[in-house]
Length: 374
Ligand code: SIN
Ligand code: CO
Image (cartoon, rainbow, N blue to C red; front, side):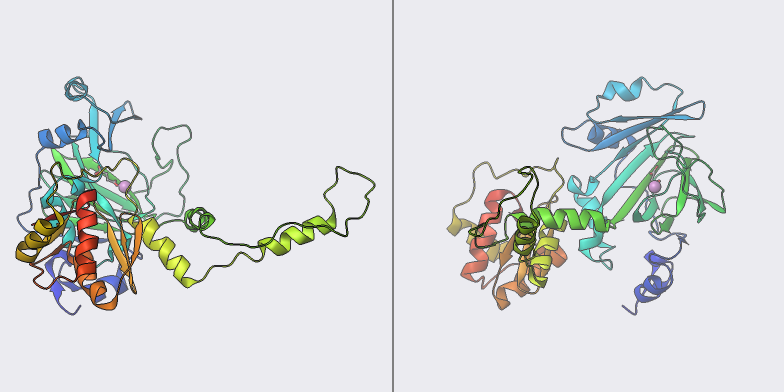
């Protein structure tokens, strides 16, 4: 990680991680030279009107914000007239190969932290108001210009009863106008406000930071299907009690001892984390191939041309475990390094000597629509 990256304004990845990541904002002029975006406003609006795509429309009138969620119809946008507005589409990398390619430039941050690529479009004056996110985000400017105002203020009080999270008292500390190819990195909880200076598209590469509460709750959900506690409640020495409605101290003690026998180890936690972080969001559906190749034909295809992940697939791994879209698979050492390469690069070149176990797993994923032969 010693190479200086123009994406990081000439910093090495290590310098960026040590000085800025999760610590302070960084403005990078011409992070992606000649970048003018991957889709035009009309294409983004069409995506916002597509089934199962997560999109929001934020409008502003006399300083008040309003929020609508997808599904949208093209007419919803025609009717906006002179209102200040912005449309924001999540998960654009699930629909556009060029967007997935853009995310690859950010692979110096582990995939387990990546959320998605959100793209916004706003005509002049549009924006979502001053707010903060619990994400690390790289805000890459596409077409047009956006004024970014930021503040590292401690006061994070929000406007009460607003449909969006708007900061009540936003005090601008720094501001810049970003042109196509410029990028602003913001750590979580850094207050920001982006205002379109003209017809403006912004690409937000977001990295999630799950709350401990969420991790703990979800771990308990994961554990409920896996715990094994033997034995049954027994009270051969039951004693009479004055109030039959009272739970006795003896009953409580016995239950406490049983619950204290619930155990988990690091492998359970790794397994939970891999499944949880690779789990697709609830609106994501995979398309199984209409007329799937036979297993033998599939094997020939991947031996000749290799295989790639479907744009919606999320794949992670940890010491012998492969996590594909929320499912865990234990694999042998050699197979692990092949599948880890697929997880790293989202594709594999021709797999000339593909082991049977790998080929079977890949075939299963192909039938589920998780991967496609090249
Ligand atoms: C936008 O693209 O308009 C908003 C991005 C953000 O503030 O998080
Ligand atoms: Co934000």
